[in-house]
Image 1 (tube, one colour):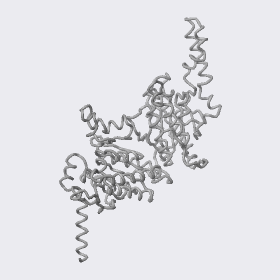
Image 2: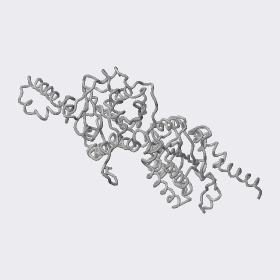
Image 3: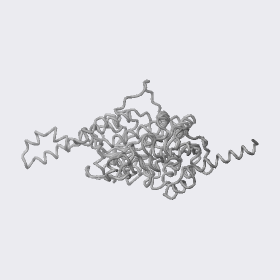
Image 4: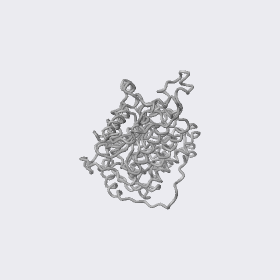
Length: 518
């Protein structure tokens, strides 16, 4: 065979790989409002930066029906390229080939890519759109998927992993997607199921449809799997670029610094009046966050899940920070099971990638009630405390208003080796609110007063308790706050602290790992 014949064979193979499951199926995908695997990769990466890997791989099944459909690539496109000039590895499942289902070689292609990304120490972007494990491959599909799951777990905390779910993803493939650091679902087509809707009794009976069982709105508000929901595929790609802008290439690299025109010593006068005089009135903590961070830019994660706590990325002085804040306008900012889990996972993600933690605190305690106690609020609240105590990145805390009881301790207090803790003059640090404390401590004295005098006695005792225990200067005198500051100086004080803490290195005695109360 001549060299020209070899070239022609190569071109033929290339065309076959590019065709996926055939032009008819590719057009059907486009007509449904979704992009094909290759369209998605082209949209995700910088122009002409994609270099494909393993385009000639095909399945090894001996099933007669599947053998006749031996498509090159085996239903997944893998390779590397750049996003805004940054190197990344990526793959996209091809729904036109066997419905994007994961066979043995399909899984092996992704496993190989993940391993290459780990060795190169660059992020990996996963685009999922497939119907679970391929039945025709039998146990070999499970074997390949098992290897993939192991590779993803080994990468966790070493390189950033971002999953885009832009179609239906079922079974173990859904587990794979949820192992990522960040999981983004497309609103219209993104779906995640542990069990197929075709096998779910509630779907079969018509009680719920597939979107209600595993759609984007469900996973963003109830299950807490989707950190963000993309309105369309372009929005999903923009979200990936935004997330990457806050993340380093790997766990030993410094997070990216972006110079900002926002002055480090900017005074935020609006913060003076943002906290209501009435300690029981709500306000929006997100407004506080935006007033403090660079250019009022805050990328909130899980905005519809456990809304009583706010988490997300921002920048201070051009450096990425992970923000955790109680939200007084939802459940008065109380910590509950979902809020504790949401914040703990984010804290550990930031700690893994050397992103400093910034906490805004206004918490009256853990949410009381039978549902919370029976649901394990003790164990889940301990996760939050454990995550803060375990983190070795710079930790800064601003007590805005209430900081009561065990919730105060769990929210990056000085006793958990937080590096810089400050409070506004409106702050109250105590075992509980003054009203509740007085009702317990002085219940006999209040009961002994006449009916006419009872309220005056109670008010006097509350004021006395606040002066003795609730005042932020009490904690400052004991060294549990580094300073009490004017609210408008918050940005300046935090940036000064962050500049000093950038070189922080914390030594801990060697151990395999801690035993977080999962």
